[in-house]
Length: 239
Length: 239
Image 1 (spheres, each protein chain N blue to C red):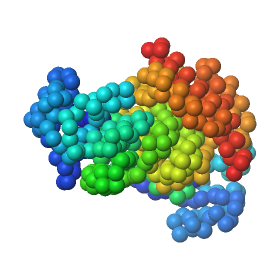
Image 2 (image 1 turned 180 degrees about the horizontal axis):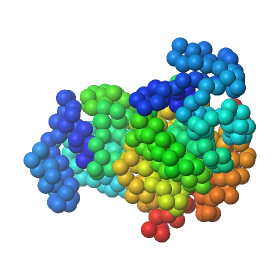
Image 3 (image 1 turned 30 degrees about the vertical axis):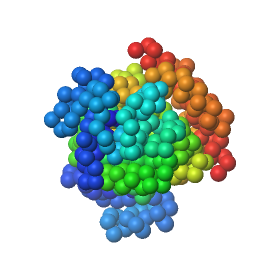
């Protein structure tokens, strides 16, 4: 995430990255031509904004080691609450990052939180210079988002993996599913997912459901098929 | 699907739609400026290819009512086996269609099957004039694909609906999840889903999993969270 935020910040016209910290010296060379780097927290330069892109359990301890400053100290975690000190904040990009994929930073939703109106305004100014999607999100809401993200990202990716496995078992490449996967995600960019639900579960096609169940060889896949089919039926029964 | 296939055929330089049949006269006017239309099967003109875009349970009866022809009679179903007559075939576009969304037809995978080598070659020529993704798929494989599609399309869409529900309950718009949904589907265009699995389940983050479980208010959502978390753990345990 740090690498992506660094690149994203470079697209901004209102801020400039003046220094990059990493406790591992071997992680710094890729950035050395572009900004100052350090492995020493006490050598941090004074800045308007410090972004802590680290695991939840070290955020607080690192924040406390930043030399005294009037700048904003923001973490980027989806699940960690905002810290208590008056200059703490949250700068959470709701996206799945991987090192090698290129992202359109202007589409990333930034979820912002600060302990003062003034700091929130500054964060909005910075995030707004990168992306068009800026949200005021409380710590409690952010935890809700983090849960929702597990469903739409982590669990969805696992369904893709099951699709790949089912294809491969019958000597077909995963490639054949890719257009369908893309279009399924595109459809909900402009429609509510409930309004565009398709498939045997929503149309109560018990014949197809029974045939699918007879085709599945893996017990966990069978449980998933039954549970999600039941969940779709329930949801669309209530509508 | 018929409308989309009609539009797709119009992009082809090797074939031309000469007639459209629908038993409901009220469905035909949108096409009347573009091709001949009829509600009478006995009035079908002789053609090289007849595409039957209808529900599984009427395909065979309609196929039998087509006036005697040497043309190919292909259905477009993901689950129906190829019919027995020598000129039967399958022309199955593996995509989710909705009336109002625009599709890039050149990306749609066409799964083809015929009862003769010559007919298969003709179908490949036609499908290949629309799309770059052409596959030889047997009836048994097509049923497997249809099952895989339920996982990666219908079930995935239901996870999106759960994400929307979770956001709305905490007064956040579904919009905030859309970039994540899109990127999750983009990532697997170039990577195997198993290789890019993220989230608490794959990293055995039991603290986050416990917190998520405590956040979920709906019993079915709870069951889904637990089952998919267990399935991800199992899969990545074996790797």
